[in-house]
Image (tube, rainbow, N blue to C red; front, top):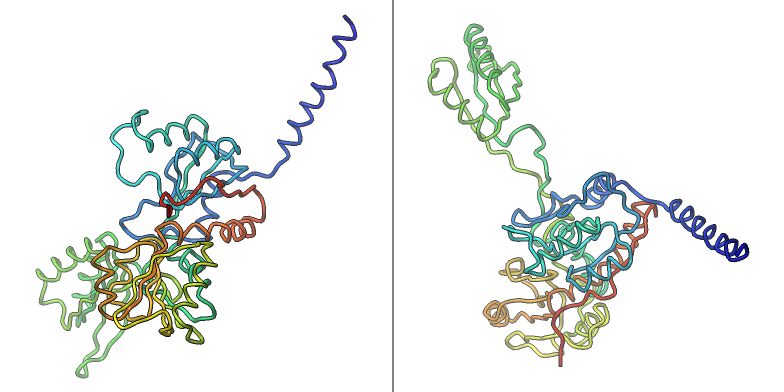
Length: 377
């Protein structure tokens, strides 16, 4: 009896040791990780229609030891993530896009939310923020073309205005008494920043007032000015535009250093995407030996981004039948690789980039079950 009691002790010790070792592994607080992910590629780059960021959050505090990367979060991928002890799933495509009216076991997306919450797994989606980012999906897709220079087809705008508000109102005030009344009134309006400087007009000393304001505040400023026309003159109302970001935006227009045949370009794309087959629509008057110098590309579904762009070749995952016909009629070749096949390979690069960006504080692993739902048979 004594020996049977003693034998389990080493097993217990080993179990405790394993817990101690496990607890010493690196981790990050979820909020700190989200901040770092936003530093890597700002969610402000995403399209306005998109649903990006943290979609499912376990009750805080929540720490992340393992970040699990996937292009699409299906039930099969979720099961894999749970088996691999994921604390946060980064799903490139948002599994929650349209509003959910209930969370039941009836549909697969609702079941994903339930499983995530029950197992304390967060879900984060960057989607079009990663499309636009300088080091993002479209940039990765362009690497398969060969040596080239590229720029965004639709550049992103800086997330914040260079000044407060998106409108500027400027006008002149002649007299000190009028100036005091004007300054008192405009400073009492919320979301208005005021600057003033001296101006000499028609040999008369005046004060130039410059107001930066929001759309709502603009209406109040205009209302005040319209009721006090005797106080000011030489009025201008300007709309302030966000500056463009040169290397950030949707799609890429790529100019090859040296032209290659369409057949050569097809081989390059297949190798880069690890595909045995792609779909090709030859432009009118084009052959496999036709030269390709300029490629317009967009990962995923590229119709809206590529429409009207002048190029020798369009490269994307999918396009509508009629958009393909339009492109081909203009002599533009079109290569389609299926939607997620133009995105998924980026995740390997993303794993390495995030590892460096996060200073290897957490484990980052790729899904092995994630795949495009379409296959050639």
